[in-house]
Length: 179
Image (cartoon, rainbow, N blue to C red):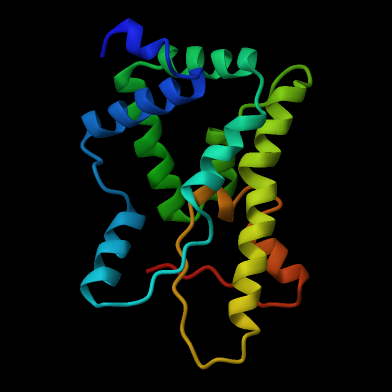
């Protein structure tokens, strides 16, 4: 892709492209979510999205251009080998159920407060978690004899306020199941 084309995009979009290329180079072409979406499709099961692509992309709408550039620079500064190592470590910590280790890896404490970073994390995590938890609560309280299988990213189950803690505050019992 030429620089002329890249210059047409916002920095957050270029960052997303770079991360996607890194993931594909490692060999992670389909995530857990895609695996289960394909299975649901094969079994002709209804799929109910907790959020739309527009919802997800809208997270970036409120981020300043300066912060987008900062995030892009950080993405470009991480080598392919380092990215693979961090991704492998993240998967291992999640599989082990090591929430603290996962948060330590994913959340780097900044020396001074950054309003852009805080706004981004609120939009990325908190706002989305409250929205998803509300929808899950509606499933649980619908009175229908249905079974729902919900898939969300690891951060939505670890960083407070996470979906589980929000549901617990609403009186639901939440249990991590691991095999």
